[in-house]
Image (cartoon, rainbow, N blue to C red; front, side, top):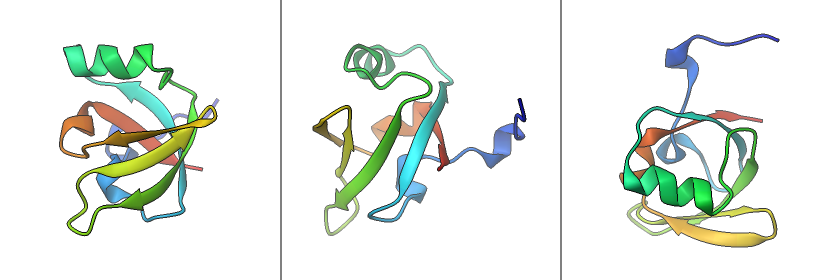
Length: 83
């Protein structure tokens, strides 16, 4: 399977409203990362950026049938790729 270089990964802040992305990996072991994993945002999960607040923080993503408000600044541990 093709694996792009690490600098090809994005964060939620890089997405535009309506775009889809897939979780590639987490690059830290913080409590926040563990909470996102417990919510089902595991590697391989595809999600859509539904909307952003006027200043971009927080952002709403939708995956597995529910919506989650997430601060892009806190989600920097989450590495994603557009799909």
